[in-house]
Length: 231
Image (cartoon, rainbow, N blue to C red):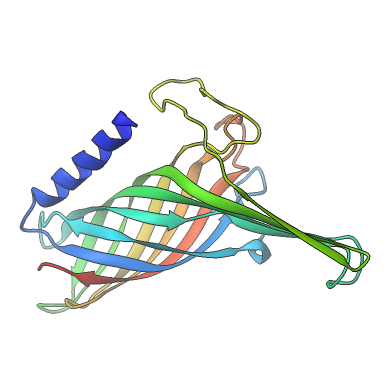
């Protein structure tokens, strides 16, 4: 936990050290999923709607290139639906897996000014996610009888600076997620419109390896709106 606090403090200090940049509140819609194949693809029908919200900033390096970072609460996960007959109203198991992470991204942005206030931008970079909380909900129906259960998602207490997975277990999720973000959008001066794709590189299960294949990794498509706090 001390290392987590250090990371957060460093990011905040980095943000406020660059007064020539722009600070903004940002929030929006997440279409979350989890990869199911070795090449990292997902079943689009199992997308889980969620959200993200937080504060971000740019560094103000130049007119055409900048760095962007921030701290966001981001919902991830997936949902599954399994049917045991041709009917979609009977004999099924439906599950929703919805963990929330504190996510710290870092982008390198290319800016394309359109006028004094408006510009297009596109960028990419790494992110670190720290698992905070979440719920798993399962609905089961057999022969007309429906039952539901809800449980808290538990995260392992792994030290990300070591190669082994401390506190790993098949029923726990990795505390730390990491990956790559790709985004683009339109900065209108008074509002920022953005789309983003998050490509998770860490397996979700705490006792799985990261290098075997691209299964069990977060995939998140996001649409967001940003409101500048400074210019």
